Length: 149
Image (tube, rainbow, N blue to C red; front, side):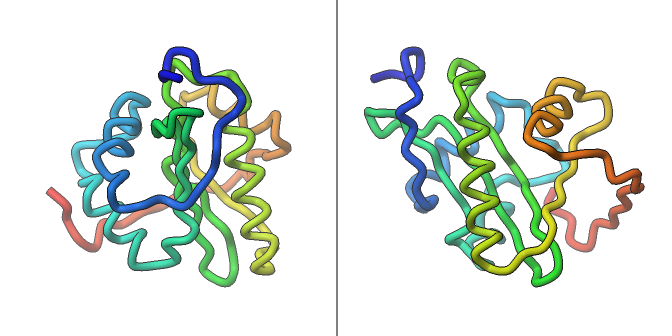
């Protein structure tokens, strides 16, 4: 089975270091990479903290078609880099990854899950709203502590 004919049979498993290039390619295909974030460093950082919460989705042939980084700091859960290959979108894969992420966080006692969507990305906002997420009416602030580039 190729990416072009992937079906709802996506398998979810933990990320493996051998997935690195495929995941970075997936993130690029989905427009998730940014010049100020080195994806290799983002992966290395995730593998140093709860690597079991970094999930990969594969098609029937074992080809990587989706990923999500799940975080939990003891207070809130976080979703980063949820991605499904463009040719495999709208088949329920992102929904399944989110269900698995929510399950893993619930098992850890996580009371609330947060995520950020870039302003203007209405299609992604609508996706999360369809899963029961709502705008918390907060302002997200950030400060770079370590420059990747």
